[in-house]
Length: 442
Image (cartoon, rainbow, N blue to C red; front, side, top):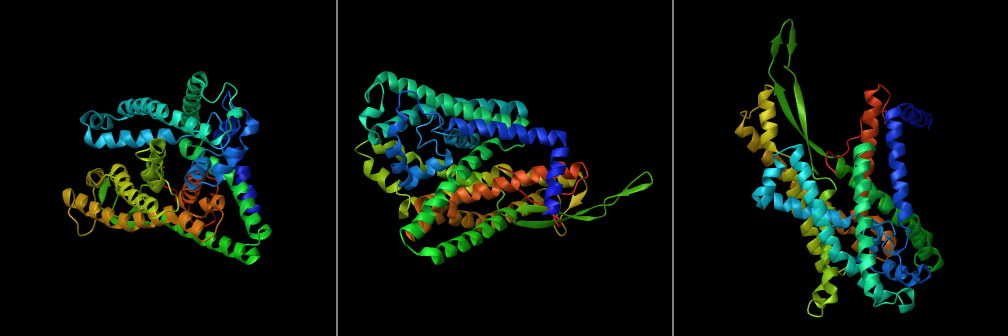
């Protein structure tokens, strides 16, 4: 405890780090305040029915968790950051098949800015579809008296859609500012804060279910917490796990000094894609909600929208595995790694430099990504099993799955960045032994 207090003091001694943390907390506080600002034209007193419906629905409940309760509050931030994530998926897929976007990916910083701009434009298009769909949900769940201008008012629909678009774009702006001037990982931090904001309410609901409703009592609640701890430990192990590839560097004499001649290791992460595959897959699983309004596709939408159903979890798991390979292929480039080693006089023992090294690294990444992606898919669908076994719907989202992985991954990343600032200025890190190994990509 004494070391922890001393570490916290050291954090606030570093002016740059202190300012970045306070700046990040300030923007996150603005986001949380905005989550309670109701869309103009809706009576806040009539939202109780919507909140009960959202909490009792697996998929809508997950949307509510990602938005920090804004979805169930009919807030201006109700759509959250997920439309931006959906647009990012499409742009990255276009970067594989469309030559124009492939060219942008190779142009460095200028290309990245152009792709970011395209992502923003596509986000607006997604919002033009999701905004009216969300308003349709409000019309179906709220009484007619909840709408000040009337449930069929065109003016309300237009104004509310514009407000929802502006709310999501503002949340995007907050995420970008946190990334640039805060402690980084702005979008991930916004999602994490939304998840944590729902945790106390979910925990109280589970306690009420076990003790007040007499469905298991203290013993069952303790068992749940013990299993949750094991899932946390397994998730941390997945995020931290690496395969070390030995690299030998040739000796070089420069003047009177000798360089190289030592063996180092390339840490290839079992889960190199981090949290993004599960976010991408979850974003795609929201698509069936759009087709629930049409009679012809309502049956398919109901099947794919059943959070505890077989087909939902089967497709969700396959998407997680596929996106893990996809995102790993984007973020880890064996050719560049092989060229860097060759340029610096390094080689993997028993492997020829150049093309053979690239093929060897690619083979290793393919092999270690398979168990990592399968385990990631298992974690993703754990909440559905928790619900089937009687865990409260709200608490089950924290039992595993998306919420758990995002919490673990983002917390480890944030702690790693804070620790790097401390070590850079010759302070002790956050741990006595070893260092925190966060993800390389968020």
